[in-house]
Image (cartoon, rainbow, N blue to C red; front, side, top):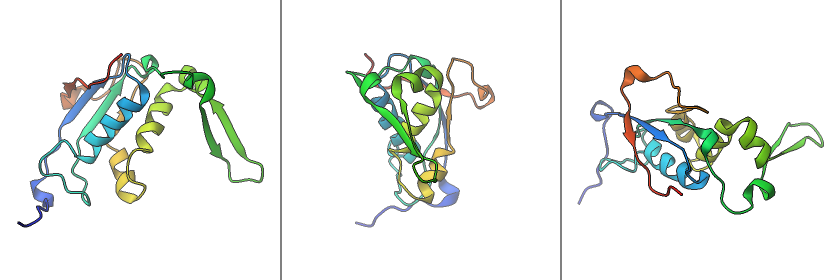
Length: 146
């Protein structure tokens, strides 16, 4: 049996709308990353960009289970000596919940140029207003709501 390889002219993309209300952050990120990669399609090709576009709304209402709001930190380095910065997730979710969701999805995608291209198909909004009404996104119900 031959391995299926999708051609560029055979690609078709859809737009999905995901409401993140009362979804755990990790479950939301893993399911959205699978859609961005194209793993929900039978013609999935691991070395091609064959995923769909995803719009995530209401990221202010995403939940973190357990004590993660207190114990978990978002860490990054400025590039200077002693430049390690830490932000507690309680602060990050209150002020920049869209950035927290974007980072969670980004870390579940491949760490290469293909993963960076997949991330351009993701749009994240803090509330229920989004700009892509013209694309007529299909509402997607994900499993794992609390």
